[in-house]
Length: 364
Image (cartoon, rainbow, N blue to C red; front, side, top):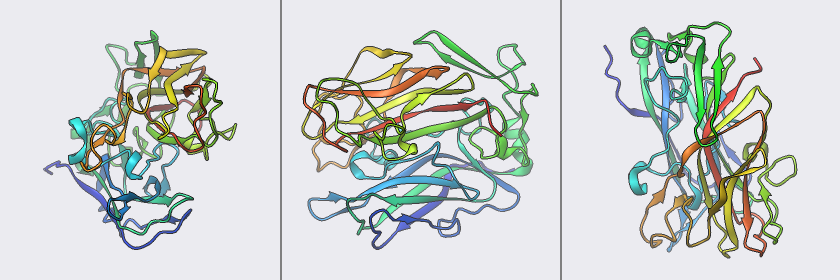
């Protein structure tokens, strides 16, 4: 029997320079991310040591980090900022309050908990430098999780999504208590998925899922345009060019076959202090009502580098805050919005972060 111990699944240290707008694409072998043929693995969390230079330290622009599972990029679901001020997966030992972000719960057969990143052969990461500042200093990324022998998977996991509370027709049930909504999730073949080596990549968090697809969801966005200076809603929306790319999109126009359960929100206000409020806007209503005050000095959604709430000489970070209750966006329009205080927030002065669970009930 294997001892299922939390371990490093990939460890990438980038040394030397990396130019603006340039990716780094280490191979699985480079990051020690290869499995044996009789092994399967799930990633639980990441750690990022951001590049900084000089004294006092000045951050460098490690703009994007995405995992690559069995050769496939996972940026549609997981896109992480690695810049020190907005790092979304800081080193575990430096997180204030020890509130670590995880992709899911390991060794679980609940589809809504078992959203860990699953792979059968190899894992690595791809990184990207932003358009402003090149990287000159080293940075490091670690992925942590569990490795299993194929023969042990049925014993450890059993059946994934084998029914809920006497309802064998359900694969999972998404609940939004704040808005009193439920989304029942079914499969064409009830009874769940028997977990083994062949079905591993078809589980939640795997790249070969059939319908329904259930994945972890974590991404960031910058305001590519200035806010209106009139306390109106700013949407982080790709099709209106309010963000740089689709992996920053936080505007969700969903039909009945698409859903997102929003679990956490974060925002770093502009240094000028003109951000006033942040909220979700779902089906035309603000949640929470009255929005969340997110000013420079009073921001319950702060994440990343702990400054200004701790002196910048203290190497502490905040995890992306979890909401009191998750919010379901399903068969409606939902978006993350911000409002200024009557003075515009300048271009790229805000960075937001969103975490949750993405559900797709269509496609291959």
